[in-house]
Length: 157
Image (cartoon, rainbow, N blue to C red; front, side):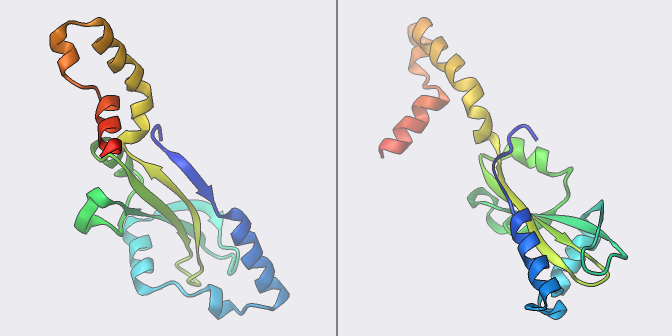
């Protein structure tokens, strides 16, 4: 996605958990503990993958995308499909996405990655053009502050 930024990948943590499981320091019940809500979210909002479950190796994993952010208000914490995320990214300033992989067979679940989405990721592309137009334009266009000037004013408050 074009506005995706500040990506955190949890693959090293996943490898460490699997290594602990194979060494016998962690039990299967400790890592295969998906809640009924997570399993329902995977069933109805999840994106199937081609990757096999590292525990049972009989089912493919499903990715669930959870969204969080101040602008979401009561929608924060909901699972969304991958096709809904670009639409939300163009309508909201900024929100966090957490991707969780789930096995519907053995209840394995693990955080895969997290990242930010939203219109604020596009601001770097338009700031220069808005400021140049205000500097070289007429007095009327200079009176209308651009997005960069608005952000500076909000930061000063």
